[in-house]
Length: 57
Picture (cartoon, rainbow, N blue to C red):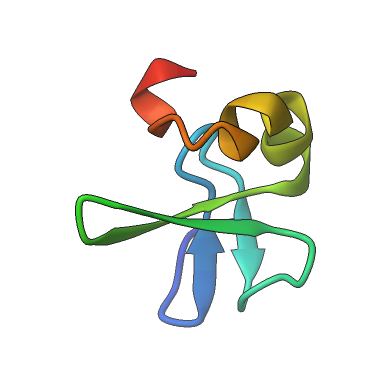
C-alpha cells in the first residue's frame, strides 16, 4: 500500500494505514508528530512510558 493524503505511516517500521487508527500511538518530539503502529507501540511500551525519544528505542 502506498501512502496517500489520508494515510498514516508508522515512524518506526513504515507500516501504512488508511486514516488515523485508534490503536496507534501519537508522540510529539521536537514539535513534530510521530505515529507508531500497534506492534511498534507494544514492543516499545516502556520507552514510551519513560518519555524517551524514539531515536533511543
